[in-house]
Image (cartoon, rainbow, N blue to C red; front, side, top):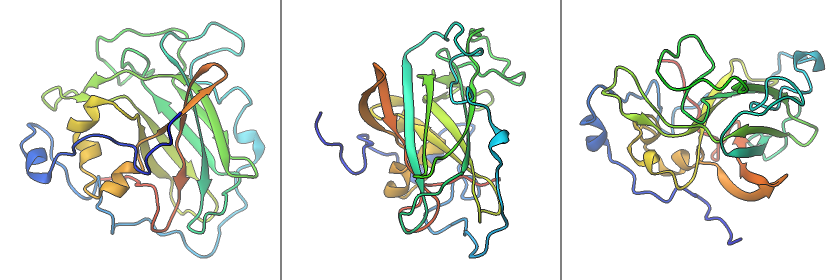
Length: 235
């Protein structure tokens, strides 16, 4: 496979004026901050953190509600990556939680009142601790796009939500993984609200061949520094 470009998003990005014309959605820096806005990790820790009992061994699989049971429909994927600090050192025992829509764009959540189909075998969330090398890995299916109610029903591209807790981080960090070569990335106000192209590229997973016979993606997370993953803050 050809070597991936450093910033894999291949699309032509929308500018700020174009985003402002999208009906029903207002991009503001409190939700999608520009690069200078940073969540600063303090020099002292407030640990110890995260006993192993906080997660179960089967919680790394979003596409199966019962270990060994029927699997959710859709395109199987594996997502893996490494969590590092500003010096490139692995962050061990970081707690990562992920959640996403099923292949039809339906969340396993009572607040999702759309008409999209429910998959009874789709769990839709996962939880794991990074290992000694800061690595994580989970199995799922490719999420579907869905209309965003109340915003003129523009379509959100396939994405996966990430929540990260780690020693020395005073609040959880929230970000989203997007997929490469996805046309809807070009018109998503949330993704394109990140105006710094390097920061925006940090949210695009890299295709990594296959793992266990299914499509594999790499999504590394940097907690701080010039290469920091773009995190979202509450409005």
